[in-house]
Amino acid sequence: MKITRYLLLAGLVFLYFPLLVLVIYSFNESRLVTIWTEFSVKWYLELLEDRQLMDAFFLSLQIACSTAFMSVLLGTIAAYVLVKLGRFPGQTLFSSMIIAPLVMPEVITGLSLLLLFVGLGNWLGWPASRGAMTIWIAHVTFSVAFVTIVITSRLREMDSSLEEAAMDLGATPLKVFFVITLPLISPALISGWLLAFTLSLDDLVIASFVSGPGSSTLPMVIYSSVRLGVSPKINALATIFVGLILVGSFVFWWSMQRWARYSAAKTPGQQ
Amino acid sequence: MKGVFAHKFWVVVWPYIWMLVFFALPFGFILKISLAESMIAMPPYSDIWSWSDGHFTWLGSFDNYRFLLEDDLYYLAYFNSLRLAAVSTVLCLFVAYPMAYGISRMEEPYRSLFLLLVILPSWTSFLIRIYAWIGLLKTNGLVNHFFMSVGLVDEPLTMLHSDFAIYLGIVYGYLPFMILPIYANLMKLDHSLIEAGYDLGARPWKVFLTIILPLSMSGVVAGCFLVFIPAVGEFIIPELLGGPDTLMIGKVLWQEFFVNRDWPVASAIAVVMLTFLIIPIYFYRRLEMKQLGVGE
Image 1 (cartoon, rainbow over the protein chains, first blue to last red):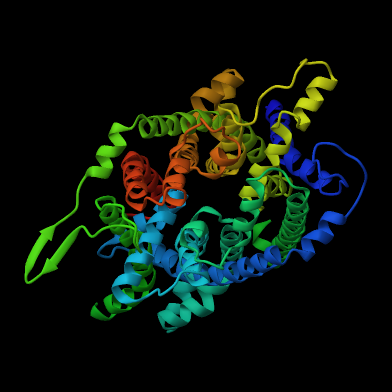
Image 2 (image 1 turned 30 degrees about the vertical axis):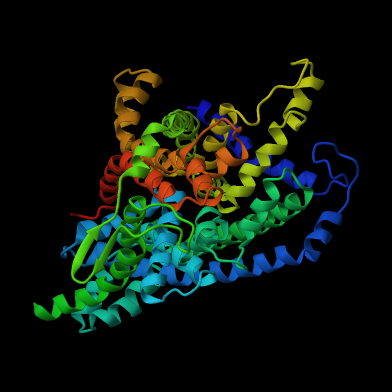
């Protein structure tokens, strides 16, 4: 059906047109984002001088990195449990807790985690205050779901005869996991890491609930500016964001293609 | 056998405890606070029981829920959220299906390139992507400028701060979540069935409706859940694109919490929202487990 080709292209135009406009108007001299006056990079320079924004950016970066590591760690274990270990008591509850965060509205997750932190803080004295730590916990909690899904599907597709062979040759389960399983699922670990990283960097709602005074993440600062209306500074920030993601993903896609071709060349049976 | 069990336990326990404490336990807290009373203190709610000299006294009440029932605002907000989310989900499906089908029929490496192009925007900031529409939809925005310069309309249309903007925002923001599960399902499709349909003289539409669509149904349903459930509680889209009178429950909860600082009422709103969503969430989980091929 040829018509789906055209609809696909139309859909892509729909997806990219607003971003394109955002990028173009970030180079506009005028403060008014709808009228083009002349080319300028002054909004980018102003961006660099905005201390609040830069602080928030570095805080978000830290939280996103640590969230990604912890989510991959927990997500790998959870995926391994779901695929390889068979039945265990409380499995239904476990799978529900892994899947539900995928669709749970953010306001519910945010509010319930805040109430948990406040309640535990009163009862146990931990966490004493809210900030980067509580945001990190919240981000790990919802990112684990996404990472687990990515790794689970990779584990399912994986050829388990290699693991069985290692097992037959007398390797312990732990050794099999680290020497055979982990390298085989490493592409999924990388995609899971990147997914958790971008999810954390993107979150406004949950972070707003669980953050404390003095710990504003980048989306929180963007939101407080955006709700007052359109600002070319935000356009400049968005352009940097979109640019980095575009370049990063194409490098990733390109290296994946190379990698696929390389491994296809090494296994002649697949032709 | 005991050794294997012990090994299993030490593997399962880490993610289990994390999710139990930080995902399941918080719902207990939200339920508890929804029965409390708002007060000026830190934390800003009353106890729902007291324990002194071996005497247990119950102090909780259902006043917050009664309050939600009595005020039309909340009823309207729930109804509106369900309506806006449902309509947007259907619109999203109509946009996403042909795109997913188009990608699934491509050859490599174009297939993975186009798949990447579809997912890419969702890796940039959701907030920024929704914000991008403000400049386009404003009364003196780009779309109106274009319409007026080609003489399509005489005076600017009001597009921002309307239901239309919300539909557009949800379809735009959640499109990849609809495309991905449908695409994954279409990729598993056995093409000999489609060819058989054509060989037996069926028209393309008939092949689509009787073979392709039914076989990709679980992807369609999964995509609909992935869009509908979070969209009901959406905050950013009604906040940035909706008008002052577009009530959506996520925004109402946010205002109750951040503006009125009434934590118990916000909790009650969340509990009611969750009871609406628990059935779709349950079915979504079953579908997802089946898709992942994880036995239960």
